[in-house]
Amino acid sequence: MTKSFGYAAQSKTSELEPFSFERREVGADDVLIDVEYCGICHSDIHQVRDEWGGSIYPMVPGHEIVGRVAEVGANVTKVKVGDYAGVGCMVDSCGECTYCKSDIEQFCEKGAALTYNSTYMDRVTPTYGGYSTNIVVPESFTLKINDSENLAAVAPLLCAGITTYSPIRRFGVKEGSKVGIVGLGGLGHMGVKFAVAMGADVTVFSTSPSKEEDAKKLGAHHFVVSKDPEQMKAQASQFDFILDTVSASHDLNAYLQCLKYNGAMVLVGIPEKPAEVLAPLLVMQQRNLTGSAIGGIAETQEMLDFCAEKGIVSDIELIGVDYLKEAYERTVKADVRYRFVIDIATLKAKEAQN
Ligand code: NAP
Ligand code: ZN
Image (tube, rainbow, N blue to C red; front, top):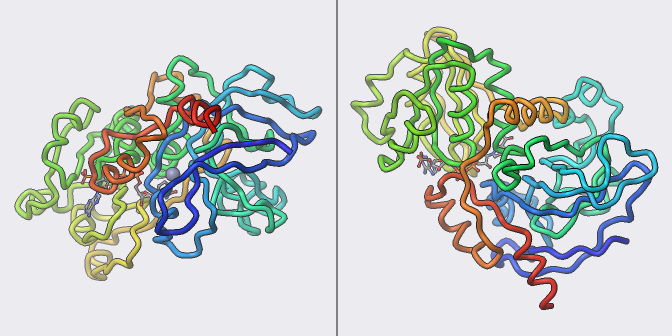
């Protein structure tokens, strides 16, 4: 077995605490990654607190993982010892169903093995995420990192990056598209960067007026304070595409009315409670409301390569493990600018003290 040390929640009400555990031995198709940085996604908080139900404890969160390859199995050719590598939201899938064969493993018919709060495909062994010193992943779920200069700022691409890149590409956002990004947090700020990179005219909808300057620095062309009904009314029927990244309950109708005829609003945020949708807003302008889940491994690699080529990384606040509690509190208060990333060196220092 492979010894690992991480931070885990023991229940939905407990704080993250040091946790020693074991990962499987490195098999012939596996890669052992010595974790260097792990981003904090709002999904970590939802799941630690069991806001979506069915959480499995102890839970070591984290699915925005980058580090160095420390060991590879005999069959591995994608990476070698010493390379930088990443792990996103999935660590395995059946590999045989239509969806796996179509490179959309996130929709695996058997249910993909998620990086944490899940089980491996044996449906027994729990998975533990990246708030930890190392991780063992099959080669096929390992991502190659080409931008090793900004490793900490690359980490959030593994979830926030792919989750926004995928729908922006799928809905054909291009030069001249009128795009709205709702919520300027971890996902939202990546959504702005990608939509701007595709040449779109980008509007940020935010509840935080103080984020206007940042939004413009990120490349957004317009900023709308979503709490101001007058500003919202002025956006009616303007948008081709709206990406909703909001983590808490909010009024979807206020954004649906902003779509043009046949425009699309894609939900990536997953609030705890259901939302009400006014049917006429969809019917009368034939507007589309749908969702999007991360992205497949091949598309994640495409996104990482796109980011390396364009110089796109996340805007981060690098923190030590002692700051986890504050980081969660600040994220929930929409006070993250714009992704917390854990420096796993601070975790390794804790392990040495233990
Ligand atoms: P985050 O960094 O906390 O950003 C969420 C943003 O939403 C906040 O910064 C804030 O932006 C806005 N917001 C927060 N509370 C709000 C409220 N009560 N009303 C209106 N706006 C509010 O979170 P994240 O990591 O980007 O994740 C966002 C959501 O996406 C989470 O629900 C997460 O679980 C989900 N997610 C989904 C996928 C997927 O595959 N679909 C993948 C990753 C994450 P402003 O200050 O600008 O208003
Ligand atoms: Zn995530």
